[in-house]
Image 1 (cartoon, rainbow, N blue to C red):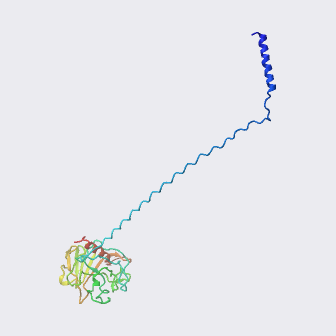
Image 2: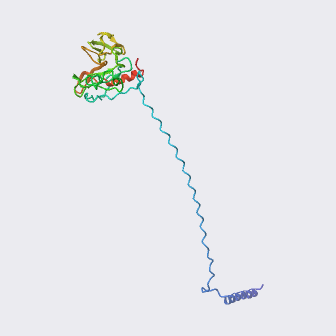
Image 3: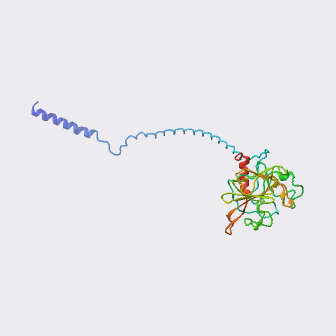
Length: 288
């Protein structure tokens, strides 16, 4: 195409553009545009259903408490259960008991051969001159519980008692109310240091002295100076008491050097807890 022709064509195109602008003017601001389509809010997602709560585990049944073990019962030679009242618990009106709760001879043997005996008061028991009446062979005298009578009201010097005087020992009835059939035996190894009209004294190498009162003189198996071993027979329990008779029983004493609260004294000490301990060992088969 010639140069003149190109220019003519360009002029025609430009003229056409101008005409289009005249005949189709642009929309002005007054011409409203089409309303936009409102978009609906989306439906919220449904809440998930809550998980059902788990059923609680049933509580385990508590383990039953084990049955308590029964307290051991000491049974004597007759099949009776041994029992005893506390040391210092005297018969009402018979005195004020000592308050020291000591076993002064923990290794001692019980001073009677057989494991059936009854520690209680001769004076304040049946058959005693201050007792409730009846004779010494009343069944109540031959039944448990044991009862202390070390500080029973008497006129003997007894520094270990609140009153300063007392009984000095413990009364023990044998198994039956029979004279001169029940053996008293040595509470420990030692030497027979004296024999009186109704007394036998045994002293250990450690200086502890055991006194036995009311043994039948004709039955004695020992003499002063004899060495004895624990459990050896000494004589029969009786009612001998010099020129008069007492009830059938053994009066048993322990004497040693102790602090009485007023210094060290060689004095009679409460034998009750030593007797309880040795008696339990005897009836449980721990002594021959």
